[in-house]
Length: 386
Image (tube, rainbow, N blue to C red):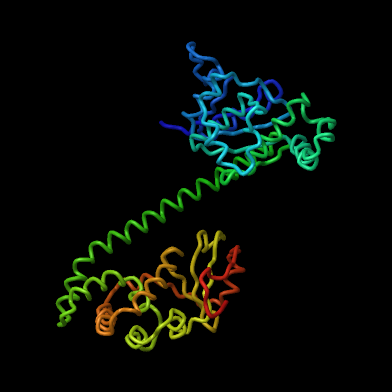
């Protein structure tokens, strides 16, 4: 059975006890820990051990980095040749560690860089004492006369402090996967990994479900496409049948959405409304909100259409899908009058509209509070309610 391989990257001499305690913790999850001291790495007799360590990272799924008081062994040239430093420097806004003539890398750092180069997720932990001294370094590094005289008690060899601290800067200023967690004891690392891996697993399950929903939706759309074209062509006697059939396919989503709204006269709105706000106002919608990254009902970003009585409709597809509706509407209103009228009536009996909106009696603010939803933001597009 395939198991996720977790590479533990750190200096061994000072962090040996912590590493030995992490091994059973990782195995407890059913994962496979990859650690140099347990012969988990193939040391190819044809190359240096540093090269073997770097190459072993590529075959792993996750890397856990632990930075302590030691810099570790300086990497040999053969190991440096395994990496594209120019490309790596572009992944962070703080790339001082790569400056020519003053760069120095440990084998631990090369393992991490290889993981970054290979797109492998990294969970970085820094001894809290080192983390504190790093802040002192940042405050004073601009003044070389001062920084050269500071002794950092958390660093075993003061001459390596710069290389450790600048590497922390590089990791923390990456455009993604830049989280760094200080730790005081093993339990801090365990708790962090337990929480992060649980969140990641939940996110993967949710995204899998969302992808399945989207695939089902598009399959259904494809199956209905030919029937829709035929129905439109058969029901409309006009020289513009080709244009109407094309527009029926192009604007099906926005017209179906409008038919799903609680509007007294859909045909009138479809034929006469000129702006998206007018469409929403005709349905009694006074506000549009996006609920994101919450708990309970809102495990994803969800569009909520609010009525004046604070009851609201949940849009059942993605926020990006909703944003496209307004763009489609702005194109729809520019169609010729007879084409627009024909398309408006073509979807009277479209059953898909029942899937688009879910009514909640609310009130909206109470539901937000009761479900512990977070990150309430105004809808990103300009509207009359901003």
